[in-house]
Length: 192
Length: 192
DNA sequence: GTCTATACATCGATAGAC
DNA sequence: GTCTATCGATGTATAGAC
Image 1 (cartoon, rainbow over the protein chains, first blue to last red):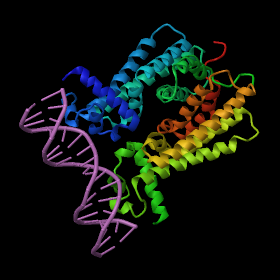
Image 2: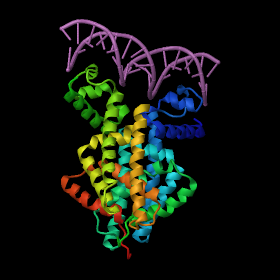
Image 3: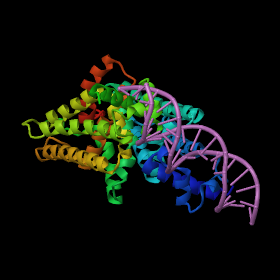
Image 4: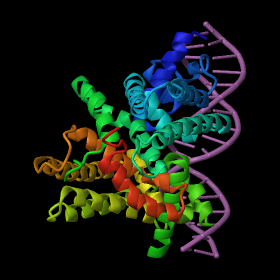
């Protein structure tokens, strides 16, 4: 019942799920990393499914909260997109394991949690799409297919934890500076 | 021993692995979709691991073959990158299930196959990086961090099957036209 | 080439002692 | 709150009949 212990279990689970995938981590594995027996886990959590749901939905809700904050602000499209990029970087640094787990294992949520996750995901994409559409209407955004930009932008941002896994803190500063550049302005010089 | 039957098993497995993930598909599931019993599968394949290795390495080798072809050609950086993008789109259309499986389940390969996969992946990224470096040297490419561009570019291309899952053939034509635009030239107009 | 039958490991989860 | 012991389901894979 100790909430600290519960959080400890969830953090360890997130690490293991990232490393091996949800289905490849047994309750015995997880317990072993905490130096207890599998049966003892059930004093703190009700099921393996519950652990996954907490990990995934916690992160998904944090993303939703941030875009709901940014969306109505009086900022240019570039500024809004920059804020979203910086938020993805910040969450990637803080919740690397949970993010990997969300991306790879949300499909293993049971029905109710999976629906809730999908709802949050769709809401996030809708707000993101609306920001881009606004940019197009205001003439700030190039004439490219909106769905393609939404897809390529969000795919890159969602998968930042892969990049982060192999990098140093110096390189994180480069990421904060150059990722917006690469995503927003492309990489081919206009006059070539 | 019938090679057609073996291919049929592998194709069905790729579909199921994409839908549910490697570990969530049992040999009984797989057999059921082929209207036979699990034991009968072993007349055609030696293990579940073998199926995964065939699926993943087949695709990985196809990507490697293509970049080895493009790399030494006498083309501009833009042309080479366009060729790579079009190849990713083509493979996504032809091998959607296998591609999803490669991305999500390569971690479940056994040691030897996993090492081979990593070798192919690293070789691909190295060639891709070299093409970008060449573009920078020739002044065709913006001054952005190379690793960040390699990452965001390849992440998007690798994950195209997610986009394709929900789209029509009309939209595929838009993808072929606008994905290079979005990736190479960005989305923010220069004068805004 | 597919079947039935089954071996044997491991899974998530529970009961009840301490 | 952790333990031992264990249940019942399910996993991959094999043996041998047809």
